[in-house]
Length: 273
Image 1 (cartoon, rainbow, N blue to C red):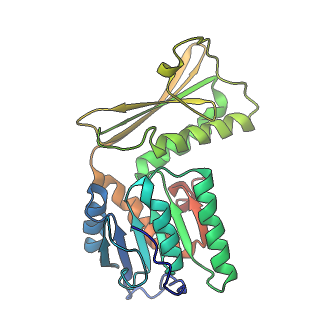
Image 2 (cartoon, rainbow, N blue to C red):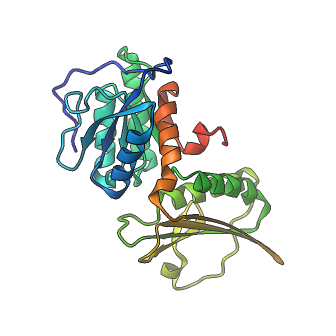
């Protein structure tokens, strides 16, 4: 999916306060596992209307989005940033569950939103969430609160083998929040005497080790491990079916229009941050 550069920028469509008016939703990546589940959830919601299904090879523009107020992106890391820029150009709020984002790519989106506001199109919102599962968001929030109290912290994420990126966006987000909490508390780096075989120690995310498992039969799971001398805390979250993500996705769809600019993490929509 690529942006349509020839189209004139459109004004954002704020979410209606009229309870009788249904919010119009487009889904990008509609033929995928998550995308098809989102389509079904939108169609089942009495206050939402599915107006467009786009997939690989489809242009993302005002002409193809069916008059959508909000678009949900569950595509692939290589396409999602271009999709979001196209949605901003089309004046459509974006709710993004695709992973693979970096500080740089998120910064470009924030800059694009700021330019749109300066050009007379204020009010556009983009929500990028590493995970829409309520249990996962709560696990990440609890982990950030616990991090300052433990000498050691590591993250294990477990997913199905069809997942294309590792570590997962959820695990990276969790580790970054743990690292920030440790830094705020003035903690020293976690103890680790490893001298060789660093490849077995997982990815380093801001000083927190993250391990990725890919196994048939899994969907999406995360363990956050904390340790002190003589004690251990384990926070475990399991998503057994993709329908578990739908309450969070639909919450994002309903709330993004009231949150201009870039919001990262569903915990900020839930006011858990």
